[in-house]
Image 1: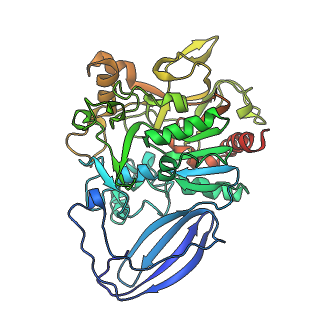
Image 2: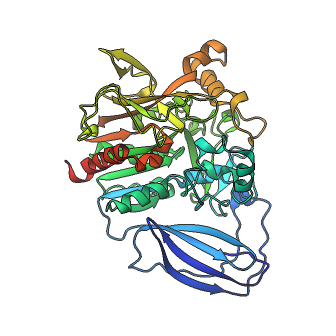
Amino acid sequence: MVSSDHGSCTLEIVRLGAQAQVIETHALSDLAIQPIPEDVGRNGCDWKPTVQITIQDEWTSGFYRLQLGNDHDAADAFFVVKATKPGNALLVLSTTTYAAYNDWNAPSFYTGGHESSMKRPLPPGFLTKDQPARFRAANAIELPRDERRAHFAHHSYWSVAAGYANWEHLFVTWAENEGLEFDYATSLDLATDPTLLDPYELYISIGHDEYWSASMRDNVESWVDRGGAAVFLSGNTSFWQIRLEADASRVIAYKFDPDNDPVVGTDAEHSVTTMWSDPLCKRPENEMTGVSFTRGGYANMAHSPPGGGYTVHRPEHWVFAGLDLVQGDVVGADPAVVGYECDGCEMQLVDGRPEPTGAGGTPMNFTILGTAPAKMWETHEIAGGLSGDYVGELNWVAERLAGEDNQENRDVFEQGHAVMGTFERGEGWVFTTGCTDWAYGLVDPVISQITRTVLGRAIDHT
């Protein structure tokens, strides 16, 4: 579906992996403006089809970008090709999080909206952008004003926080260059297909994977219990519960306004779209990942601790095999592998090493491998561009988890950590980095080796 007032354009279908592979080119003509409905944020564009694309059997599973352009303008869209013959590893793209940050002609969940249709374009910069490492969320606020202004003249402000360009493409580029093979799916696939993970030994989450439905969690957790390996190279993971409506084309999240979610006060109150750790949900994400943003926060950016690396606490663990590390070493500092949003857990020192207390749902068998300091933001510290009633996570966590937003309760949660760790669950196991920005660290040989070791253990059972 294309809307244009210039009559014609070229459409390229590009598989966007380590290399950009042009698959097909189409010349589109007789184009016209298709009006944007007033309810586009809720129901999408509802435009007439412009061209039909037939996915061929020989197309490799992957992320496919639709590049549209003429002498006047350019735009893009995407689709994901799933495997016809599944391999042993599956990368699930965090498309529900893309939807949460999508402000194309309607409010996002950060600018006053609580519903987002997947049937509308994503803003510029979500799918591709130049210099993603320079314009990552952890850097963007600190860049010179003129450079920021020039970049955001052509990219959405929210493109630093969500989209394939930020983390997933970096990981895919690294993995394909390493010779690793995996299949692709979206978080909507994960939500709607309870058998999606069945053929696989390894599930991978990358980057900023913030918005999860109950069915997404059900399908990952039950699969791990049956013997799967879930690897979360991501942060702020599953912080907010969402619901899917309209045949899974609409994402719902009331977030800081749960009392207005129509399920409150009904038998379905557990599906309220606020924090998974909220007493109304009664299902903290720690149970799935081992960690939570409620015990993490922000790192290596404004109003947060600098540093960018993990302090190693258990160098003898198999995750660090072949690295010749000692306790107290810091890994990943140069590329700032710890940056933006971080997940942690409540810890206590036992014989000089951190161990989980079990608070908040973190399993007691969770092994803490590395930590880095993080800080939760108050309302007055959050970045600009948000709706006027947006609440700082520190204030919200203090109110919802401790009963009142006061200084005493804020002090409990303000100073957190990114926590790297692993635990066994049922017949399977989980590894987490506890931070969004792991993909930016893959240029570091140590971070690259840790990643190969973790993925290899799941696939090769070594």
